[in-house]
Length: 412
Image (cartoon, rainbow, N blue to C red; front, top):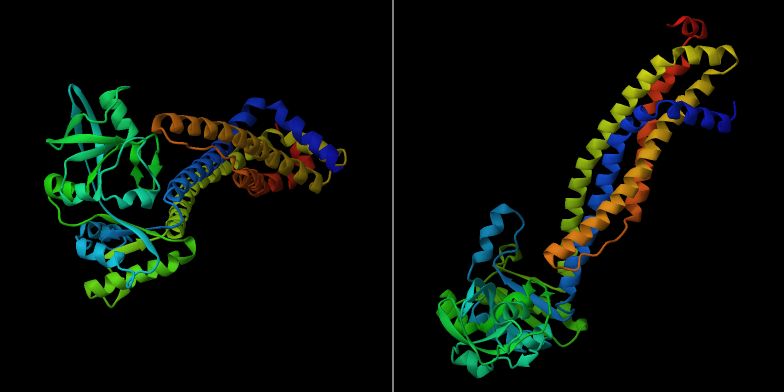
């Protein structure tokens, strides 16, 4: 019997029991849908994070206090006080770090801002004027505070666009006074919609002089993050090495594994994001693979039932000349067809759900969560579904092909 006839016979056999065929492939559909959804959402998350990292600019280096966390035991190290004025002044010194344009020490926090009867939960960013050059931003209305304000511990603030809208609506906020951390601040500037730049969402921040934040709001004498802007992308790796060497000499560190700080460039951050999302995707895909195995076992079970029900049909076909190979191919074709159709349905459903997920995440998280159809996931899903049908269909097909025609015709 030709492959074409085998194919037609297989389709006819499946269509004879439509409901059973549909229920049989549910496990495959769910598994492939999960694979598509995981790959699409992971890709969207990776692209979103990378776009935020790229917002820092390729000439910005991030220096964070504490050892770089490599596991739960290292988490507490990020609260160390290893970055202070001494470190900031050393990083500004061209004899220690070459090619530096700006050094912006930062502290972060959060609190409730009040203006009249309006309130807004906002993030606190204490910084210096160098942040403007480090992040390449400028207020749209009013002005940023000056170095004199930083030196004088002035109670002045620049608002992110979202904070301004919540507290003042369409009215002009410049010149008004807000209460933040139970302290009055004069609003001297407002940023336009900027969004996320690295770890900072400028729109939700109230930005004040770092000296004011440390002395009056947080009670600190150290910094959380120092942003270093260098003169060009070509010198960034050299500058990063200079920063590491400078801080190690200041802290008396000879073993790099004992660093109480960590330095990251845009390339470093992108690599870490790729590693993290890759690991998470692999874990989630392994969970989705379990449903494929379960679906494959279900298909094998149903195919064995089908072989038993169609024993007389098998006997009749063998009696009129069908070979053992013909029967084997027919049942194997049926199994592969079932899983392949399940794969196509799963790919389509996964693509629709991925698109829906990107729309929902964009709306509710208020971020640009892009949708990307994972072609690799689609090809992988279809290939795996066909392979599952082949693997789990071999045993039922062999059972069918080995039946004796005489015994099969006698079967009731």
